[in-house]
Image 1 (cartoon, rainbow, N blue to C red):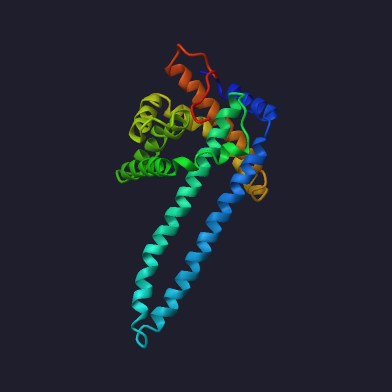
Image 2: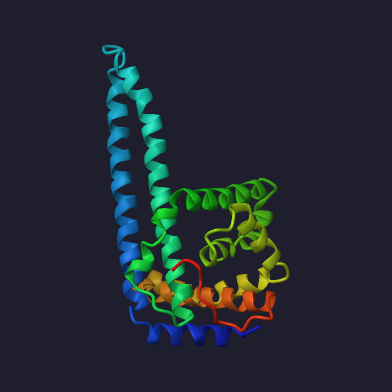
Length: 241
């Protein structure tokens, strides 16, 4: 297994040699993600204000009840739309990181390459969150452990979109046996970078986000190699092209 320093160095090397710079791709991802979240939040807020006004006028206008009841399903739909789009973009960004650390051609189109898999991606993220939530019911610690147990599911899916949702989750569970603490420590090692993001009001995230994302991709590739030693590390074309 590569050391944390070696993983981070590989991430830096991949960042410097990328044809489309990771900072640019990450910036586009953040702008679109924040824009979608902001627009949907604004719409939901306006609807909430409408409900408040309607409630105050309820005695004089009973017909308002139908409008108030209609808000709930619309709110749920808008929340689902935000969740789906952000999940698809997050998957595309992770795919970009994987291709970049493998020194394969990756560009802005990779960020949007998974919209055709929207339903499957939604189901994958939903099942991951469901399992984590169920484990969290037992207490805080089991939920954290579950988060790392299923941390590689999206990476596995990206490498082979033909795999089933539960298959990706199961393979992640097996892959992370004995490695959950290791991956946790790797992520915690970016804590000072996270503080820098706070100090700079998020500006440093333009560098820190792709740096940490590429490092996690290196970790996945190395872990994949350890679990399949017959294959050479960082070789082979992923199946999401």
